[in-house]
Image (cartoon, rainbow, N blue to C red):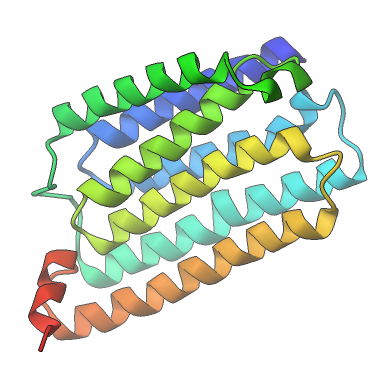
Length: 213
């Protein structure tokens, strides 16, 4: 089980690099959805089985992360008629280098954290930190609002991975609260994107500076 969990986390890390190096928004949405599927099945491998709590968390994660939210973002992409992130603040090669540095730093830092001793899955903590940092890179270096939403999703994916360490001790309502918070955040961002698109021909956050008095 632990070997399978580590293998899935390696795939998550590879998907992080794909996001950092891709300009096609549709591909990024599919990638984040694939991460959602992986995160949905991770509880079974991390905890050596699928109890009632793990099953509900898994179903909720797959439903929201891999189905509901990606479909909302695909709908927004079609309505806004955008396909690519053309001029990011940081180039894609530089983003990949930053992602590699973040992943390396996460692997090094995880060795010194006491939480590593609480799980047999070696990559759980470093994959969590690396995914959060990847989401932060996307969130801060991309211009399109919809891409920034995807960055936020990746950050939350990292938080979700870390939360698997505490799944047995954490009340179930807390896990549901995390998923509901994510759903509400994406819903609000959808409203923001809709309002931006009514005012500007693009959904670049750089254009928000024109709203200043």
